[in-house]
Image 1 (cartoon, rainbow, N blue to C red):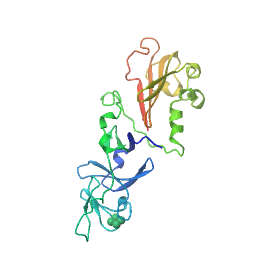
Image 2: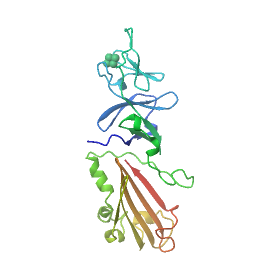
Image 3: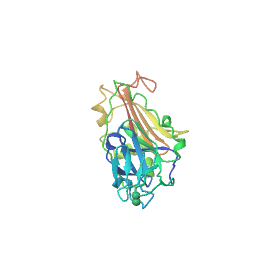
Image 4: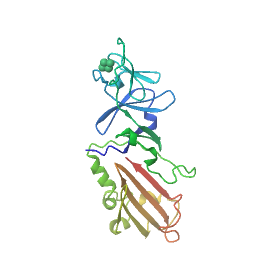
Length: 253
Ligand code: FES
């Protein structure tokens, strides 16, 4: 069972083009493409006539023509042309999923379209700041229940053992964690004070000597994980000090 009235990540923005293609989200098959204007469209990927996937059809301007008998649909999922008939059946329509682009990702609303509000997609502080960098990693496919991934991403305690030699430092073994429930999920975090940086971070933090480090692991409904890593030189900055340019935020969905 899934939370339906929520925004999910469907794809990278560059993956959805003028070509019809099928994606699967929450077990639902969806035909996605872009209009000539670049506007994103997501339609239930089964023609209401004989269920051929619309993604097997043809794009005609801003319409989709079914590849079986030619029923043609607009971006709202309504049939606008039925060859060989004198009328367009009003029930000939497919579900239209709201889509939205943000952070280089395509987000999809899987529930009642009338409730879709793109302003509810969470904010990433500093994302648009020109003096901050953005890295886009490849997608990693995991053949497991998504809850296991959420479990892993809410578990900073594994770092000391799984990531020994990279992300782990002595402080990741025994510094207590603080757990906070929020309206949108749960956060586990801890500041680890005045310790030698872990080997991976030592190469990139840009200062010498010991550091103060924040581990911030957050999962937000329905399935998004945000991890934050903040490093400051030990002492002068601390938990309330400046956050740039020694901070990282990662979105995992
Ligand atoms: S299956 Fe689509 S028009 Fe017949």
